[in-house]
Image 1 (cartoon, helix red, strand yellow):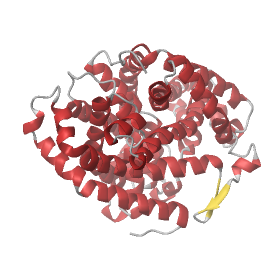
Image 2 (cartoon, rainbow, N blue to C red):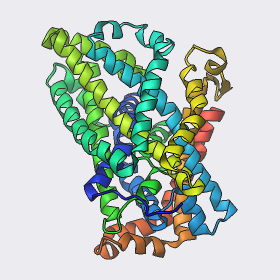
Image 3 (cartoon, rainbow, N blue to C red):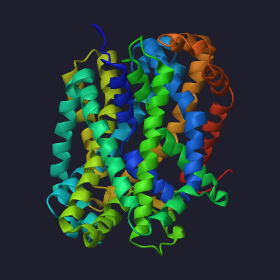
Length: 472
């Protein structure tokens, strides 16, 4: 590929764009759902520990590798390793993983778009009915929303890093934060909210289990866009004048704050309208919690704020989550787009079209995996349960592959690229890095316990998900 590589216009643009890639369905849907089914505060405690001691060093390693090589993940691995076939595997995994994550993410984002439209058009009462969600995801209208969303994402991607991704993030991310804080503040004023706050903030350490640990690490990696090649790609667009370690910490802070407040919004709301909720009942929570339970909560609000305001509240929430999902989807897809441009010399438009054509059939297969087509609904059986094609994609590329990719990044940066070269890159744009405690911790952790933890979690997740037992 010829020509100067695009860069983010500003440090705040990079932080908001990277936060936009991190903040999404994982924060606003996945985090509250995982917290609900994993003991509330117990999950929050483990999650925070992973973010602080595991995820930030891995994030810094990925971003520094990207800026040093000025390439996509595959190009970065090839550049540093001298096209080593062994390390190329890590590069391919870092391309394939975000591609497949974008496949199931597209389906979830379609649902959010449809629910926002439903709430905005005063359809909240119908949305609160038990069969609405199941009927919608198996209806023909889902394909109309899929087409609209695909065109919207394609337009943003084709606009480029500065005019598309950075501009979108600068508008949507601050809006998202303000909306989330306002919704959370309102929710906490409702009766019985403190029951949910206690469940969410007062930990019961007995609830920490191997499954909770696995859920927390998968959530942290997915939420922060680790192991997906996104931060390697975004690092390649960062100016040499910006501090990578400082930017990574800000992204982690923003991302974790959004996840925290999303939990503080949704979990207390569950108890607001059903104070007798048994926390044990929440252990089977899934992504459908947002799409089947929240409309009932919003509808119940009409007794307090009126039907119009309840619809407005629901519209704001689903718009909030849709904004977050849109910025994340664009960021995830930028990884394979960058690979098409760097490795094949494609123009941006040709890359966007090639990506859309490559993903189309897989997205459709996930879309019809909920009863519309029996073959994809009952695709496989493993771990003691029947799984759809959609389930398989999530189990493999969300729960399992992310810690493996993080493990490979750690080994590659420390033992192939060498930490002295990583530190030299991190010192560019950050004159204080060499003498900082962050440098000492990153040097120690990336070369010792972080790869061990990630590998053990990967192996145990394989056992839990696919073999039906835990090693721990």
